[in-house]
Length: 289
Ligand code: AMP
Ligand code: FE
Ligand code: FE
Ligand code: ZN
Image 1 (cartoon, rainbow, N blue to C red):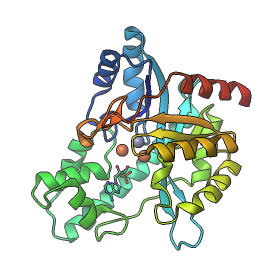
Image 2 (cartoon, rainbow, N blue to C red):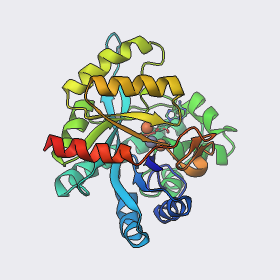
Image 3 (tube, helix red, strand yellow):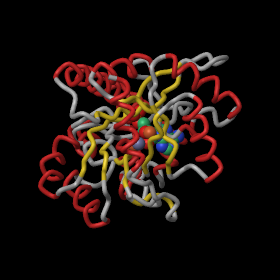
Image 4 (cartoon, helix red, strand yellow):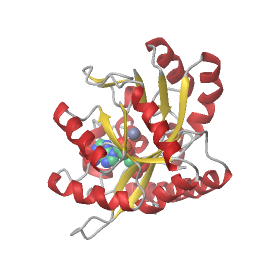
């Protein structure tokens, strides 16, 4: 069994990179990928520990990108996974990531000001203490709960932080096609995570959208994910084969931040991804180059 979609506390997960490696070994996972949002810091920390423990650790990232959907006025955020199967990306990609992280810091400053203007007493320092290396909206949500402004993380998003909520501030994110291009340039395989979350209101449009993404260079589709039921998994596997995409998969483990999702096994044991999935991803890489 493998898990190719997990988050450490370098982004919005609650496990340290060392704990992720330790748990994976204890579970007997044959491979693990750490896919933190917009940072490689968790992977970098885990890499020597995994080597020591004999764990096959895949370098990965989950980028936030902007995509323009047909018939919609505003661009929306779409996540994009990158798997660096031949090794971690070099300086070019890493310095590009620094610019991405700076746009997050800029957004965070504006988000604090906006929330303050709505009467919430919070400071940038407080939220950065929770977010550590990469402060995101989930850390703002945690702070709002901790300070008693809302009672749950979900309420924090519904009332203040969601794209449609009153506290939302936009941030500059690379376009989806730029994300794909940057990952490929750095030697990675770009894969679309949790497709079930896209076009929830109009699932019939997904195939067209996927076709456009493939034209931009998308190379994989996250077929296996803890939010996919058996029928959806079968459907995405079919689509991946149609478009000659590598099937990828993982739980999207965030530790205590999403307690229902377990490392390796997903929600209520709905995942058991075989090693061959990673073997085929590696094969698809050798075909590309
Ligand atoms: P950021 O990348 O800092 O803008 O934060 C985005 C993250 O916030 C996503 O990856 C989700 O984990 C979380 N998120 C965004 N919108 C919602 C929502 N409506 N409800 C719960 N979590 C959300
Ligand atoms: Fe996350
Ligand atoms: Fe995601
Ligand atoms: Zn994720």
